[in-house]
Image (cartoon, rainbow, N blue to C red; front, side, top):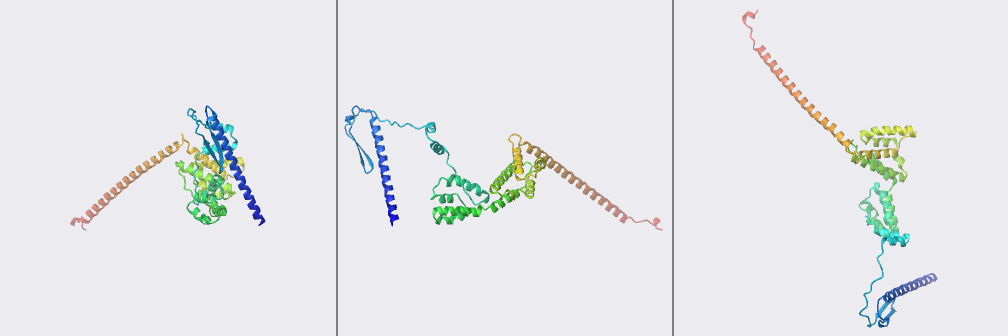
Length: 347
């Protein structure tokens, strides 16, 4: 009971302090109004009757009827604030706040339950939403940022207290979609299951380079880079590359073994593929490769058609010769069968 009484006394003192603060703010406003009225150009101050009262914590301002009709219109002394003035006169916090207000509105990041996107989502949510929201709204913000399976997993947290529900929701997301084993296996399956890249498909080579770089950075952040950094996976990755890139990688791998006295790893291969993708997608000379490779392909198709036509013509000639020979054999056989010897030839 004594503690309750002490708590009520403290709350009462806080209420009184708040009332005193409001009273002080109102006095300040009153002083500003008086200063502005003194700036009005009037012939005789006695002709204007002014009175100020503080009634129910509100300023009551009353002006007498003896006003000067020739007085000039009151102009506010407040001038617009320029950006440079704020930066020169304000503190660092005010400058940062002013610059933040000038930035465009951030788009909401959504998470659909894809393990490959878990870490990028959770880091973006913590930096752009969780850091600036109160504890009561973090859970609802997290609900708005999830869709599909991810939202279904944390739907049960809405019935809990906001703070406990938010903590439990993040835990469920990490257990379901942020498991290190699940993320590692998903990335390895995506990289090793990528389709073979043709020599003239530079866009697909760029896409594979980006995926491989994202895989490397994610596994490195989790401390699981060794899961993909073995000779079996490296060989499967190299097999996806165009033939000319594979030939270049053989030379690169040999130089690494000779110069660094070590076997090439996933970081070396990732940097090499990224450089090859940049070369293939050069804005000026990137199209020359596809043009050179397209011409031999067209020649091969043209030779194939000619060879097919010649082969068909040869088969036709052979068939016609066979038919002619068979006809001659039949005629000879008929002649032999129809021959009847005369009496002089009979012994």
